[in-house]
Length: 329
Image 1 (tube, helix red, strand yellow):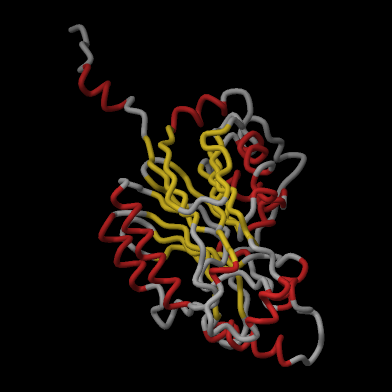
Image 2 (image 1 turned 120 degrees about the vertical axis):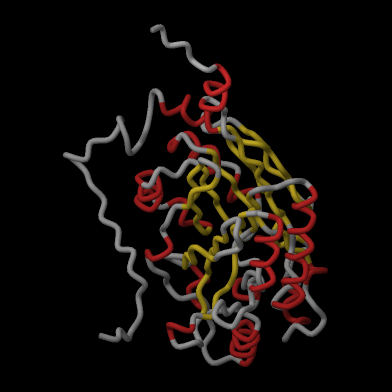
């Protein structure tokens, strides 16, 4: 008997998986959790109209980046300005346990849209008064599958954000692709990137507070190094985005430039070429379709944790335990 293959089955077997990705380059209603959440909801609905399957937002979008630190002497001790602004920041931060992201989860499930969302997290498991810059991943069923707290806040960020841990260094499967996400300068940390390569990440989502100077170089570099799609998404921030009830608004505006974050969101292909070049000073949802086959093509000659690695020579240890001061035995 001669075996005759079913060509229809062969077509199904070799169908190239695709994923439509959206970059949500928007500004917050600065330090106002509820109004910024409303803006995120509207953005998700816009992305749904564009048939987006994975939507990525910028770093710390809800309720916003702590711009006052650089503008108003954030390192000064015992000033009313720093104390009151921090208190305002804590009051508007996101508590996952209190359901602040419930509406986002509902929309994610409704539209079958996976989402990476940057938030300032008020961590109940760390006493409920300290803040962490966190990247939250929701799958297409609206389930929160990881909350990655930024490992090392950068420079003046350390005045308001605590150090995170490795608990959120996790990959996620979506339509045959493997996703991973990092906050801002974590993307410059070689060992952290390597932990994602070892998990098979091939769609790397880099979340930034804003500005092209952050995204224009490293986006293509990670793509070329990891042979992965890289989605760099930044927020926007202008003087008009400061609400009138912001504490010490007059002092902040007197020091602030017209543009504090100009975006620079972009996408790179697995060969390091641009899929979408950096977009500056333009608010919206910007989309592109990615193909799994292009990842395979670039892995033929280089795979950082596969055939081009030497685990007998170098290895990486990753601690994925959530860190806390109290453990119940």
